[in-house]
Amino acid sequence: MAKIPTRLATYRLTRRTLILGSLAAFATACGGADTSAPPQSSGAPQSSSGAQASIAPTAAPKAGGTLIIRQWTGDPPDLDPFLNVTFRAQEFAGFFYSRLLKFDAGPGTQPNSFIPAPDLAESYQISQDGLTYTFKLRANAKWQNKAPLNGRAVTSDDVIYSFERFRKVSPQKGNLDMVKEVKAPDPQTVVFTLNNVFAPFETTIASPMLWIMPKEVIEADGDARKRVIGSGPFIFDRFEKGVQVVAKRNPDYYFQGTPYVDEVALLIVPEEATAVAGVRAKSIDISGLTASDRKAVGTSDPDIKILEYPQNQLYFMYWRLEAPPFNDVRVRQAVSLALDRDEIISVLWEGTGYPNSALPAGLRSFYLDPRSAAMGPNAKYFKRDVEGAKKLLADAGFAGGLKVPLIASLNAYGNTFNQSVELVIKQLKDAGITADLRPQDYSAYISSTFLGKFDPGVMVWGLETPYQEPHDYLYNMYHPKGGRNHGGVNDTKLTEMIEKQATTLDKAARKAQIDDIQRYLGEQQHYVMGVAGNTVIATQPWVKNFFYETDYGRGGEYVPKLFLDGKK
Image (cartoon, rainbow, N blue to C red; front, side, top):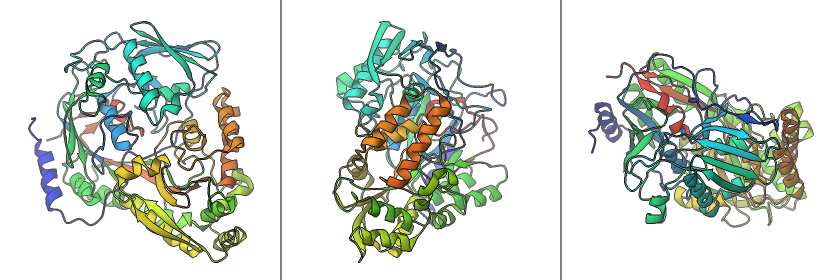
């Protein structure tokens, strides 16, 4: 077992002795930023060069050292990213497994730009008709040197095996329904043929979802829960429950020379006060912060760098739509009118926040401000109107008010989310909706309620994973085949709108179609959207070449490019 770095030992001592003042902050897995729309195919042949997707670092990189990141608010419940959709499992995978493409992170690339870039694939081409994508794998790509893989080459058969397993076992398998077939003409070539033109396919492939998994391990063990062996930048070393996941540098990584650090310690820190203390004590190199701690940390040490930008995620209320009372659009609209989004922004994010439409504010180039004139008459449903909510309830047959159970997980997303639950319950009560809180353990929540397995007549307040493309939000949450269709949405008009925008290659036309979808959902309120604040990330001054990206694959995006200079 590797020796624990001095600063990590200090962190552990701090964690045991600190008198806690608050619960965990919002998980750093959730965030967003100003974005540029990912490039869309014009239908003409295209290719992407095989160079590493980065720009020259800010200084000459230095090799070595241990990077300590406050990573999670709780243990990863499952080490197989195909079987578990929780952010803790998906972020875990980003350090160890590869994808064909990933998202660029570097100087000149804004957080959450989500620009697809080569990863395991050295290059790729798109056919003239937009139906065929041909990926060329890197000749130097190897599985990590652990049995039973023992450093063998990664081949096109591995990609096909991973694709077929994903389509068989993953709760998100519907995300790749556009793929008709996958073939391997030779060991370094993989060809995806689509059923129809699919505008965001490059972004879909780059999204942290289709991890390239080890056939030998899965066939021997039945899944990837026991052993973690990938072809990514880091080699799994150990998982200490309630403490950390430790990863070692992969010396055979195909982006030669990276990662620069020898080791990464991914800390499991539920308590925000502990994270803040660790940053101040300089025992944590990178950590997410709450809005309330942002100024305090920055003021205490001006050398600590603070990065801040709008979150790319959704706080939202959902329910089963096939049964009363939420099969009545008036009830859903009443819930939306009951929410005081300005109060939530003020209390949780110190006045810096954004009302979300069906898309989060972090997806700036597709987001439609739900309270702006661009939303049209349905903007009224995003502004608090208690009397309007009561009238809608009365018209729906609930003149005396409505009492319903409300499920929320209070041991997963941190104190900011937990406070949002309290605020929402209070605001609903003002409008005659009494929400009887039924807290649910996160492991049970993510394997049941989040997948739509809960009783009709129940409300759920939750978080939606940050996606990198508007189609992923719309398809997953609202299409009958969506992997995260929590409420059982089956709206024929909406389904047609979602499918149409996915096949529209012209960027401006697609943007207009997605705007129309947001307006339509503003009226239907299949789910009621809340607000989101800013993601706040603190880094120590010795962390160099830090260019953050907010997707679950960032362990293979910005982390390999980091280096430490001046850390004691």
